[in-house]
Length: 278
Image 1 (cartoon, one colour):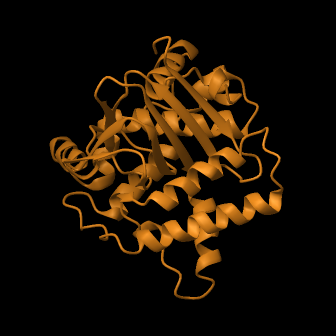
Image 2 (cartoon, rainbow, N blue to C red; image 1 turned 90 degrees about the horizontal axis):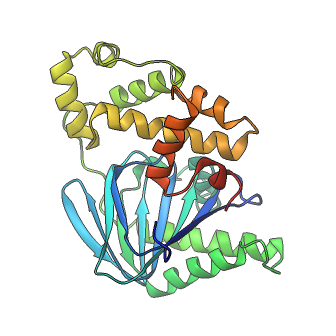
């Protein structure tokens, strides 16, 4: 990052698992990646271009970008101005609780049905900005007010998401196969995972597996696995007191130095700074 650039992660204790990041970057360029949480992004300055499944879209102020877990995408700033981005990183359990608030009956839609979306809505963008402000450590707002603001903002987002096109069927690996692969990798994350193992799980040859996997996810298997390791490291940094050395080993990095470099490249911040919300 340059001297004009900064990024800060805030762990919101009152909303279990919620992380809010605020980035101010002179060079905004995120390579293809995915998340394990739902990401709700707001551009507060500049123009951001995001590519998902081969389609690019620009968004700026008054836009909300909604990205579900597992969806591979990239992003970069347009132009030379300073780009400022606020992102709500919402765990699936927290989003599901908010969805149940809005649909307290058997007709509750599944959070898995939500598709990626870029929504232009000035009032909702302002509401998310206000929510971000009120969740800062120095906010004087009561917990009742914060809870009410969170509930209302998410309810409005769900209303707009209900109107977006649903996920199209995927070519290649099925949902069941992809879920099986992720479960296997999660349970063996601290170990070396080979192409032979993953191909065997799907009943495909190694060549077939690579083609089907990249078509489905948008990432090569090794890049996808690296991101999974890093996303799991984020959870351990946030939720445990394990040492960085232990976390690196737990998620499959052979040493702390390798972990540090990979983490900083992915999140623009060192693991220790992410842990303490610097």
